[in-house]
Length: 275
Image (cartoon, rainbow, N blue to C red):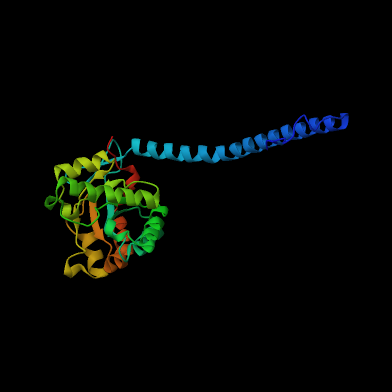
């Protein structure tokens, strides 16, 4: 560290004192050099970590650039080039309410990828934020489902902007990343909401089928059966489910049933993003 000599040459009158001043200056220079070496050492230690972070970001960007699937106008998952066509995408809306973490754990155990579409009004407590962070850290994609789940057709453009951008900010603050996907409540997009979502780097999608909000399918057995055996299941199916108790219980049977029929589950990271 730099030495400040309070009484420089005036005190150095004798040969001994002059020698002492010289020694003090030398000690100061050595200390400054030591501090510089220490700083350089810290920078060198931090460099590999910084390089690893930048490399991870570059790899993530490359993954999106090498997309294997795109979302069609009817929200089915369409293969690009020679990607596997017999696939299905699992998605869950209205998270994280009460069962999102349970759903995520079941999916993780089954090695089944999925997208969790979140509503901002569920992200106002520390517990909810912690839940979303855990879901993200488990490797699941996060989608934007607006703040209040309002029908966007009933809102002004400024209100739509607030509904979408508020969730972007919440998710980024919690997970470190903005949402990768956007789904409008009730599937009701406007031209403005669609363009805004794409401008924010989100892939816009609705779904091809879902049942868990209907009373006859609000039990795990009935829900698992219809999700796997509906005539609507086909290549590129985009399955809509919700953060519900019966849905959480049905996850193992749904995943196993789809796979038994030969369907692979799409990794959201392989879906094309807006350029």
